[in-house]
Image (cartoon, rainbow, N blue to C red; front, side):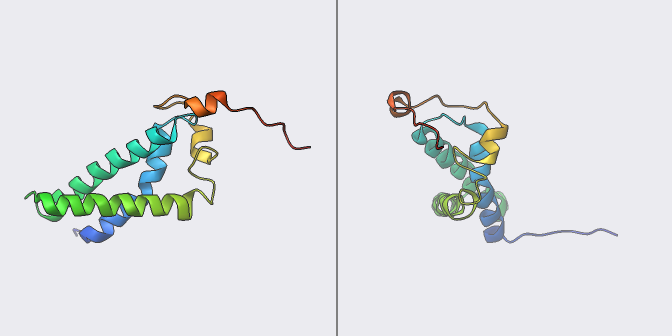
Length: 122
């Protein structure tokens, strides 16, 4: 008995976009500048959007559709980061993922290097 699972392209796109912030947290370091994390999310959204478009069109690539899919993926990824994962402390600089995976791309931003360290709360 063969069981075949088929996902609609839009559902696949939303699932990929929802997971992208966690992937960004895995591949960037905790002290990476926000611009590095944003650029990483943009690149991963482009890859995800273009691959989703290729899968949805059966291998025929349509540039306009790929651009729309990429932008939509980026918007959903940003919304899921700020609306779901960051409030749950899964992603973000203080999130669980970056606490467990201490290495990654990006180095400390100039603003973070010159910031005055805060005193711990008593």
